[in-house]
Image (cartoon, rainbow, N blue to C red; front, side, top):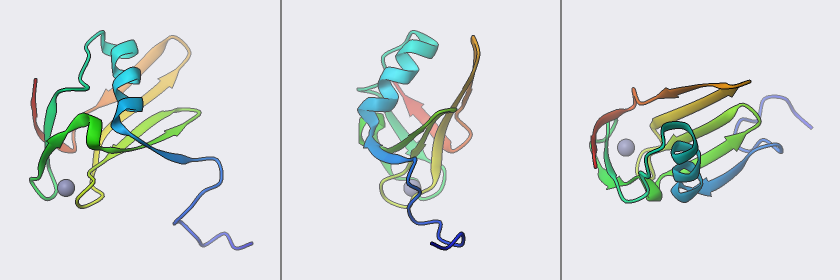
Length: 93
Ligand SMILES: [Zn+2]
């Protein structure tokens, strides 16, 4: 095994945006599965449910399906959560 590979990490699995919608519903109390976001990287407009989501023990990361730009991050620690939307140019709800 090499430690230089960043393509696949055994403890992560790519999911679709519906997994993220569940996390955001838990965290924000808002169902964003039908919301659309404009990517801050390539400006593609797509459903949040269409993002590529990686879930980890700490939370979730949603990436643009077109350019792999990080759109949304959710970090959980104890009873606190941090939701980062810095990768989104806009969110259409
Ligand atoms: Zn993009």
